[in-house]
Length: 321
Image (cartoon, rainbow, N blue to C red):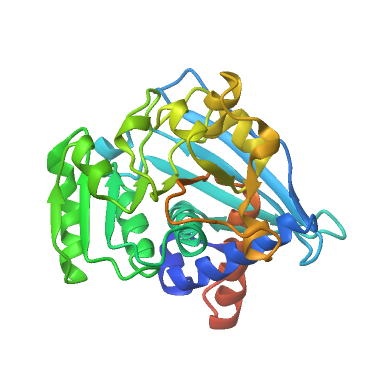
């Protein structure tokens, strides 16, 4: 069994590697050559943690495995990342455990890759202002990935704790871009692309705050009950997602579907756009929304890259198992 510890991930896998891997996975999912298995994600009744298991199989690449972990909200006070995850890969032919991979950084990178892919395929090419709702650990990864997709000229942000926006301001400065802290009305009025990356259970962004032509990447809702945007906003948008079944149960779409505002049959897998089977955005005035629920196959794809690189560079630990 191969072990790739968390401390090695940063030098083994880049954001560009994750973008390419996730893009391939979305395309495979739309072709039905890869599938995710039902998700388990629940509050465990201890330290307010949410724990889950996601698993899947890519029959084309023979990648089989799972990611186990979740959200421990008190970890920051211990000097730890709130999101804690580990990926296990299995031999698809025998069921033997092939590798165990630290997945904290990989989770952040693959989540950012997913929203960046949605920006590449669904936002207006002339998008100039990028808005971000949320300034937690994953927000900087989201910003860095998004800035590679369009020639943005300005970044604006909102967070429930405004001081935390300093981390986004620093990233914008690294890219030579101005950053402004704004209220939600201003964010919606100015932004061409909006990324939401929070752990909210109540809608933050309202339908009336988003103007025509905006692309939204809603990346924080991955649990039953979570919600970042007004359900009516989805009713006003063309909705895309990573996986429809997951979106309507634990994604941002769960609320709009439950309220009868969106029919599940109208939701489009982004892999269909990547494969050229759906046009994606069809007008400059259309609001497009990507519900990024975070599927197991994303994790398995980026973990496979980490394992290959670890073996090739000699940093993997191999143990009898």
